[in-house]
Amino acid sequence: MSDQGSAAGLDTRPAEPGATRPAGPAEPGATRPAGARRRLPVLALYVAQFFSLSGNAIALVAIPIIALMQTGSPLAAGVAGVFATVPLVIGGAFGGVLVDRFGYRTSSIVADVASALTVLAIPVLWVTVGLDFGVLLALVFLGGLLDPPGDTAKTVLLPDLAALARMPLARAAGAQSAVQRTASMVGAAVAGALVALAGPVPALVVDAAGFIVSAVLILCFVPRRLAASVTESHTPDGDADPAEHTPAGFVAGIRFLVRSPLLRAIVLLVTLTNAIDAAGMTVLKPVYATDVLGEPALLGFMVGCFAAGALTGSALFGALGHRWSGRVMFATCFVLAGFPPYLAMALGAPVPVLLPVLTLSGLAAGALNPMMATAMYGEVPDGMRARVFGATTAGVAASMPIGALLGGFAVEQFGLAPTLAVCAGLYLVLGGSPLFIRAFSGLSSARTSARPS
Image 1 (spheres, helix red, strand yellow):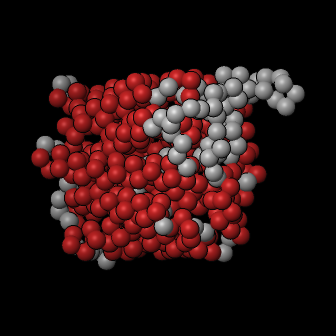
Image 2 (image 1 turned 30 degrees about the horizontal axis):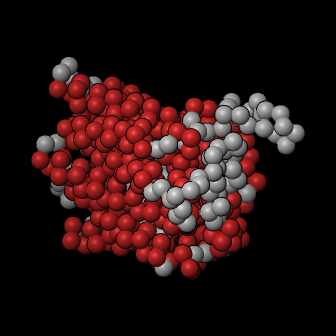
């Protein structure tokens, strides 16, 4: 996901950048945690997410810079953004069904290992036979295809591992958001340093190593009996549900989202803002760092400052902010998460101004993921986890390829500053919309219904 929308929203990331159901058994037939509290599995999950998402943050910085280095064209960077985001839609559409079919633990491990190999192929080709732009696009596409199943698998593991640790679900979701923000902050800062010292291509070696560490942690520390997905689903009459592990399972996830006014409103809002943030992360910010600030490595520190603010915001929300969670707070945070950074860049803000603005915007964005995650945990029942998350991932990612392509086209046709100004205006309108849309009033009631069982 993107820097604000997806990370602030239903982390397809992210982001930064960029994502839910009640705590309980993973599925019918799963063993309910009992006896002594076990914290190691949920801690291992958090650390695994940290390493995998740190790697994603490195790629988020390195790949647009590689595209600009190879072509010098903002439109080419937008095309690379399309190849990075289209797979999120495909992977989201089928990833949830595959995760349900093969299991949360197995899906997470396989996705991480495959992502590591895909990312590692870029520097290997670069130093051996050379890296053609078309090959780069193909590898970016494949890597993006693997991200949603791995992310979905880790996300749906949380309620059961939190129950095993006897951790309140709202606190576990807040901690997960803090891990995501920390990963974005550290990964982006590492990427900035690596790009400055060695260039963007060597940075991807560190990215691949993060995926391997994540796979090893899930393999060694997440119990099999609490990480199984639906192995045998039943209808109320006791018959197996033949749609559970087929594309019909994805359709069932979509139907559930459509029937829930709150989830439908959240997904629509994040889908629209993700289009803006896809343009921002793949085109506008790389071009701003390269052409306006004069240093591509500063992109990593721009992303890192936003993530640092978001980490602080997540922590503050977990400690205090959840008491006032509702659509007024949600809308306020959403506007502040996106409007100020785009406006500052449109006005040509220098580094000493831009980085604090990004940090303060991240502070507001930090509350968004916990609010949405808690609401979704309260809305989505057992047995629908991966399918609803897969549908959500596909939904919020659907606009990202369009946003990335339009961002590159707009910069080439109209210039960077006008494009940034339009993005700021759109974020102001969209971010404030929850104040006027009745469905978002469900944010307050959802937070009370999401509780560990």
